Amino acid sequence: FFSLLLLSSLSLSHKFSNGSSPEDEEEEEEKVNEDAGVIRRSMFPPDFIFGVSTSAYQIEGAYLEDGKGLSNWDVFTHVPGNTPNGENGDIADDHYHRYMEDIENMHKLGVDAYRFSIAWSRILPKGQFGEVNPSGIEFYNNVIDN
Image (cartoon, rainbow, N blue to C red; front, side, top):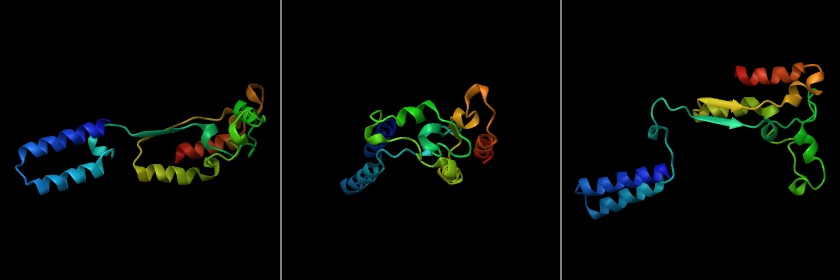
């Protein structure tokens, strides 16, 4: 909405102030229409922080790899009838195996901040009374360090 409002006001001020021909105005209006809905970094203050976020269950996959235990969602989605078409997060976006690709894509997009959740069942596979899973710690350290 903000970008459409901004583009509309820019277009109107241009039409009233430059004394251009109707043909020029049509070309300019087509260009504005092509850009409608486009959000550019330049539309924000220089210190604006662009960030993305993910949810462990929805992105990681690898639901039983490297010592990970079952989460509530793992159990829930494996009960027939609980999700449409029996869908679950067993593979999800496969972030567990492709995190470096995902991080590289964030760099290419120019993302300033990344908020992610931790699958505690990957860190503490048997809950609060079990041992810490070193593979889970290593995975999250790799995400943080990159």
